[in-house]
Length: 125
Image 1 (cartoon, rainbow, N blue to C red):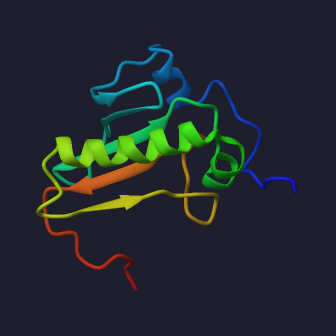
Image 2 (image 1 turned 120 degrees about the vertical axis):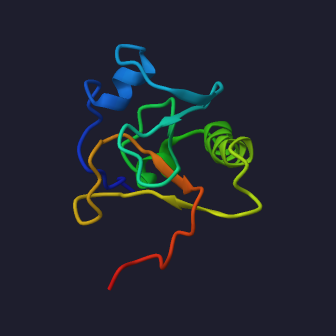
């Protein structure tokens, strides 16, 4: 079955350029499967982006085409970042915007990790 995607992967997107070290980032974590870095415009005291190293546009793309090792490695990286930032006791939020309706701005799968303050309700009404 074909995987719906936003568009073909664009190697010029900002996260692809960060992965190639063409654009600097304040990295807090990296391994063979993912990197994590501070958001340039943080919304909470801890606002970190976690991205897989592979060329994936969305969760649909990633879950259908990434290897089991890549999927496990990415999920473990997200958990490692939360632990490293000391957010497990107080709590944190993960957010992945996928597609136009969700306002995904960069066509590379990424997870926002928010923490360091009370976060309130999940969705504004």
